[in-house]
Amino acid sequence: MNIRAFRAALLATSLIGATGSAHAQTDSANQDAKIAALQAQVDRLTAMVEALQAANKTQPAQIAPALAAATATPPAAAPAQLAAAPAPAPAIAHSGDKKKKAWYEKLMLRGYTQLRYNEIVSGPKSAPSGMSRLRSVQDAGINENGNFSIRRARLVVQGDLSDRVSIYLQGDLASAVSNQSGTERRENFFQMRDAYADVFLDKAKTVKLRFGQSKVPFGWENMQSSSNRIPLDRTDAINAPVPGERDLGIVAYYTPVKMQKIWDALTADGQKLFGNYGAFGAGVFNGQGTNRTERTGGLMTVAMVSIPVRLDGLGGMFEGQVAEFGGAAMRNQFRPEVRSGGVSTDAYRDDHVAVHAMIYPKPFGIQAEWTWGKGPQWDPATSTITSKRATGGYVMGTFRAAHTPVGQVIPFVRWQHYRGGWKAAINAPRLETDETEFGVEWLPLKELEVTVSYAKVNRNEADERRTGRAKGDLVRAQVQWNY
Image (cartoon, rainbow, N blue to C red):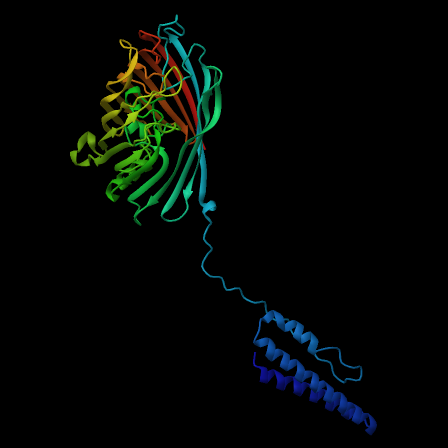
């Protein structure tokens, strides 16, 4: 505002009003009164201008009170009235950069639930004491009663705390525990599965350190989420070295940008990958398994590599195909639970190596893994636990019909074989597994998956007190909803 111009305009207005009033009055006595009133008006105008000058140096919002004080109602004898001053314009807020989200505003909540139905069509649902029944270490719902069960009910909280740190928390609402006074199971307890933080060491996020409870990088199908796996369960051979798949420790992952782009393209195509892990991984863990107290005082060391390779250069049937090759190794000492209570007094050698190879289905695919090693195993000849040979694996063929009128359909066939101990069970009983499974996974919606399978089974029960092998047929179904 030009204060001088405003002052001159106000003074001129007052003088004009005063002059008109003087010509209208002829009485000399009244003339003196009018001059006095004019002087008072000028004094008020001067005060108002000074108030404006002071307000101009402070916030605009303070002008209005100053104007009100300076323009108090004049005496009745005043010959002229001033128009009300216009209200000052509101102050303009000058915002800086957009406010960054707080870390808790960047978290995401998701998960999935699996409802299963298991039916033993043929084979020993029950058996006399000392004889194996048709059972599986992968699914306790395979029993004489069968019917429905909640296999998994996962809830995940994950997100980026900053550009370099992210967190991942996963719990399972379908975990079971045994009655403290017996063997009666109690279903659907909430139990921690994962609780870790990733710290990225470079801006490109090719190298990261993972701290906390997470998956042990051993075995391709162990790393793959159960929400992505085509068959209902993992195989005994690959899962035996790391039952539960997780442990507490620190692991480093490295993924070259070129390999990450291949995996990103496979994800965009709808392929079922093994998860957010690196092409190269190495770590140290307690070694006692998921949610178990450390008992040996030593550390389990693990390393894994998985390399995706485009097969376009081969042409023909390999056009657009991607293969993946890799392997893993682990060294550990393990103390299994014993039937007398607690864990064994001795720690047993628990060393394994594994290899994997696959071609992602487009439309045909093949996947295979095999493992060799030594681990804790019950010896019926001596009635003791010893470290003995463990070996086995699987081969699976798939056909992926990605776009059909009813959604994606993936038929599969899988054969698995295993001879070795199952250290997660009491006394680390020996398993002898041979199984052939046929099935189909149907995805009518992104949020819904339906799997139906038939398996011809020949296996022994994971109980050192029972002998022999149970043969039979299983029909199984699962509905999975993702959220």
